[in-house]
Length: 426
Image 1 (cartoon, rainbow, N blue to C red):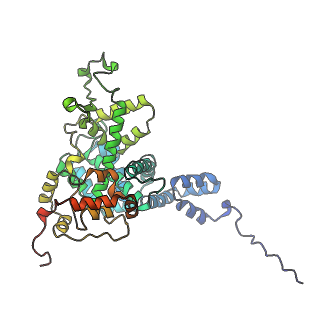
Image 2: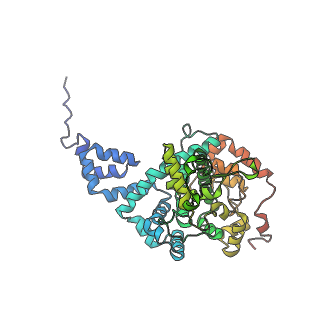
Image 3: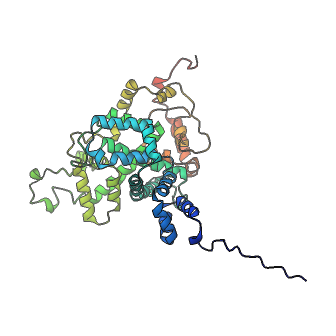
């Protein structure tokens, strides 16, 4: 009986990660699914570290394109409008020029996205990891708890995560253009009129504006809870720390709550808006601050920072009321307004995609186009983050049954005054 010859070993076959070709090393690093995975690879192998150092720009560029898929323009807009250079030189012309660039995604901007400088990439990743990623998880827990769906049991889909993070970046852009970080950090010129602020929000479809408003509702709720934690510490009348301070010379307005009719406390919207208008970094900092005394000082500085402005009391809620939307429509009638007036059908296609209206939006507006948002949406829906979730999650939670009932019982339709009576095809 013949004994088979041993299978020869390929002497050229690599026996370890270190021996793989240079091109394979670069490909491995470029396809890292997360920054933590990329960092682990770089630190796991001297050879991979060497490849990363030599190819840092293309590797990070590819990583950013994958991670920011679907909202890279928004992330870059948030970065550019948030730089010290832009903030401290804001003027009417630069603000609206930025809005126009953001709207049109010009060739010049596209080139920056194709070949962004290394510093841009580094700052995009830092902001994403330190602010956007943690707020994504915190928001999901906040909203899904109200929806009676656990993010631990039902992890976020890629579409749901994209919707949330897109809205976070867009809210940051809004804050950078319409808000203020305080004297010395932002120029005193910003987009302040409610109708003009509505024009900024109007860069996006109505249901994507609702995504931003869902994040804003989250920020308000979180800040309100933090205000309760530090209310006594910042009470200028009761806290002994202020007893020997001449507050008229200090010129601080730290009111967190008011008591209308001496029955119940309500949030002071002056203080709340002062904090909200500064954007996600301050919100993230407050959430991360564990030490109570440090939190008190963070809130105090946040309240005072924006109060040098004369119209700090105006914020997003005023921009999405009925009046500004009517004015916007009269002066800047859009294709979306025309689609609404012609009662264009907008059925849910059965598959969730980030660029089409989600099931909740389609259901509420009965399968027809709407360019109305904000004031007419039930607060319960926004507390759920209704436009963030895939159809399967909404149906499993039972939320769709409630929304369908709400839609049927809502006999008044704010679109009816503008519906075209003639045949739109005539």
